[in-house]
Amino acid sequence: MGSPCLTPEIRAEVKALWQAGNSSGVIAKKLGRTRNSIIGLVMRMKLPKRITKTASPLYHRPKAIPRVRKKRPKPLSKPPIFALEIIELGIPMIATRDNQCRYPLWAENGAPDFQVCGTVSVGVYCPQHLELCCTSRMAK
Image (cartoon, rainbow, N blue to C red; front, side, top):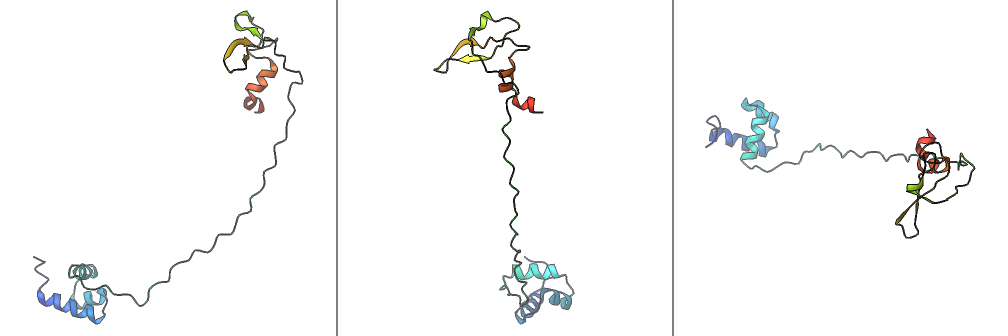
């Protein structure tokens, strides 16, 4: 069952040296073995663990200095690019022409009634609805 090199005499000597308070490195030098082999043997023999005299103190991390966060300035309320009022004419989608705004106008109950803005526009939406829909693109 154990290693043929670990005779009962060696085991008894390791046990005696360990109980005398020698470290595994000292025992290893005396017996001509490695420190790890002695540690393994001590573990297999279930010898009691020792409390080291020079235990390193626990490292206490210094308290973090609180970071002063810069307050972000409040965004300026930018005036609308177009000062024109949105006129919600409300014409049926089928009746729109190429130069009319197609911004949908919703009914009070939330269901679409297929009405669109219908004001004169250059693209799909009039300038007012374009600003409403595409504020992130306009800001760049």
